[in-house]
Image 1 (cartoon, rainbow, N blue to C red):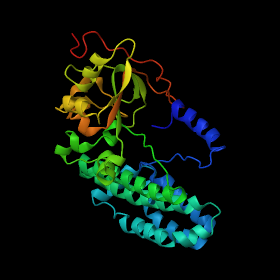
Image 2 (image 1 turned 90 degrees about the horizontal axis):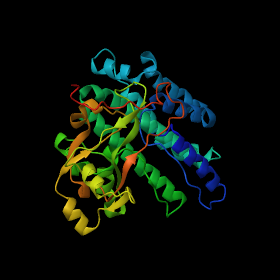
Image 3 (image 1 turned 45 degrees about the horizontal axis):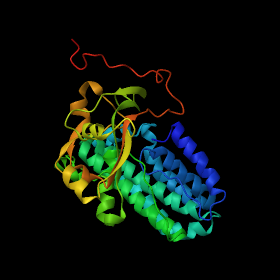
Length: 336
């Protein structure tokens, strides 16, 4: 999501903007895939402001030392009963940091540092639970991950409002996280997501914006832990929302924003259709099964931006095989 040339260009622009802005804008992370980096962030902060607290934190976090750098090893070992979980240790560290945040903040030149330390400790706690939940099924781990995102967003909002009363927040994530899951087939599986949780808390103050495309290229892998490739996106399936929006596109206006808060637009599009989701994984050979689901677009989003032809993001450090997008054979997917 962030190790690409588009984000780099945005951050460079943001740095220049903040040099002259009365209230600087920030760029923050929401996900929980940084267990060890967050541990190091907590220890680094405490080493600087309170060495005694750092010693206690280091002792607690040493619980993870037996499992190497891959948190999934920890999840497997604890779920299988091979090792005791580190739950008490990470909860204890988070509670101590929360209780001491005010005192520690007074020792820091930057008022954000104590807040960031608490958020990293919260991430460690939630990541510990997440990697254990991974081996209990997809739904518990998914829900824990998106609940973590919602908790982080709420904490960040409170922090930013303390600094600037009129702070606004923009969240960039895949559609499957940002659309309201209760309006999709995810709900039948017991899944929730960030967009749903934010909408439940803030109502119409939250604006959920999705993206759709008909064809083009994306940067995605075939499987988890495999290198990303530039992949050709198949034309959208007939009857899907993407195919419908493709029919509405014109050569003069291939890309457009569709306001789903408009009552007439919403009523016409409310009956459920297939919708495509492409994230870090794209499997065109099983696309109908792997990437399409039923949804009611006006209940899922407040608006969508349709890009009829999309272009792959360029990674900052692309794999040698990234550059060439594979062509789908004319007989795909039948291979005859």
